[in-house]
Amino acid sequence: MQLNVAKEVAALQRMTVNELRERYAEAFGEPTRVRHKGWLVRRIVWRLQAMAEGDLSERARRRAAELANDADLRTMPPKAPRHTAVAPERTKSGTLKRSGKGLPPPGSVITRDYKSRKLRVTVLQDGFEFEGEVYKSLSAVAKAVTRSHTSGNLFFRLVGKGGPK
Image (cartoon, rainbow, N blue to C red):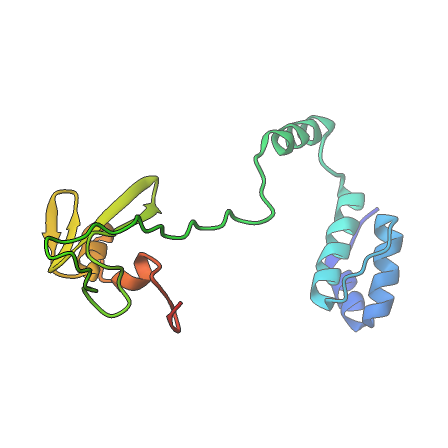
C-alpha cells in the first residue's frame, strides 16, 4: 500500500476534532480523551505510516521494553529540602541580636543541600562563616557557592520570592 502523506495530512487537517478522535480510534484500536487537533493529526499520520511502511522490528521492540524497565522514572521531581536552623548559641553578654532583616540570630546554623553538597553557614554577629571564611553578607556566601550573583536569602530559602515566609 502506497501512502501519500501530504494528501493524508491535508485530509486530516480539514476534519473536526471529533472526526479526528474517531479516526484515531480506528487507527489505534482504542479511544482517546485528547482534543488537541495538531497532536491528533500527527499521531494518526504516524500510525498510518507505520502500518503502511512497517513498524519497529521485534528486536527493537524488545530492546525498547528492556530499556523502559531499567529506567528510574519519576512522575514528579523530588521536593527540595527546606533550610534548617540549629538552636542559636548565646553571646558573652547573654543576648541574642538579630544580625539583619529576616535572618536567624547569631549562632544559628543555616543548612542547605546544593548539588550533592551539604552547605552549613554559621550566622555571626557581624557576618557569616562558611568553610572557615567570614563573609559580610549571605549573598556573598551564595556567590562563593554558585559563582554567580544571587540573593542569599532566596538561595538559602529564608524568604520566598514575594518576601519573608
